[in-house]
Length: 275
Ligand SMILES: Nc1ncnc2c1ncn2[C@@H]1O[C@H](COP(=O)(O)OP(=O)(O)OP(=O)(O)O)[C@@H](O)[C@H]1O
Ligand SMILES: Cc1ncsc1CCO
Ligand SMILES: [Mg+2]
Image (cartoon, rainbow, N blue to C red):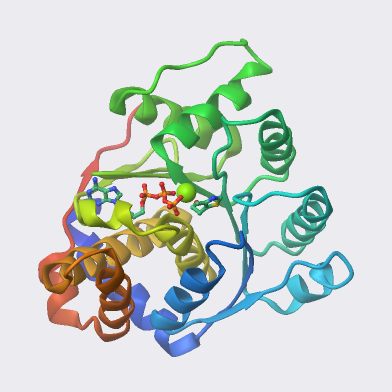
């Protein structure tokens, strides 16, 4: 199968499936991202719920179609909620997505992320620095080595992390990379202005939860979510006057994406299975 040939069409089909099924996506996310993430999930046609109290988090996972966990504004009370939610999702076989915001920055984030990795997220989505840091943690128990932060090393880190987890890893940036350790996809959508709006990566993580809820192949789900989000961002950037109008235009564009725009606009490239 030629993976890349089908990915634009696959992205459109998965977006339609999200719109038809409107999956319920539970997000334990940060205070900065809550609004953008909930609105982006709504804009792709899914249903967001920001539920994080330890008293109700497990009960909510049982009704949710997917869970996303983001450590952006971490505090100790939330760590237990994250553990309980991830454990419940894992037990019930529900897809869950980890966003390791700033994981390299502090010992608290490193410890929390390491514990969450042990609960085997279906998908990890972060920027290059975060994925490099996380792969270093995963590897540290085996070899105790760290990486420096080049694009090439982010790719190696993503592959290592995906193989260690048995999951899918998404690295976002100028080019996005999605890998399950065997199949690797690069997505050339997006616009640099997206880095001037906070929490768009976090919003993409929540949207990835929506796609993972409707597609069991996590590599396909993550690729479609990332491509659709990047395409909406770049389309919106053409009309935007700056970060504020980009944010609004991104929500409008996500909501209005049609088959012609997705089929013509998604720019993906896939590598054949490696050894
Ligand atoms: N230089 C760039 N050119 C084009 N698109 C980009 C660029 N940088 C990021 N993007 C896009 O912006 C979106 C968010 O990715 P980014 O890597 O900025 O996430 P992040 O660092 O986790 O963001 P945040 O922590 O603020 O939520 C993705 O769709 C990505 O493709
Ligand atoms: C700015 C910021 N600080 C903690 S989380 C967050 C949102 C982007 O990740
Ligand atoms: Mg981020």
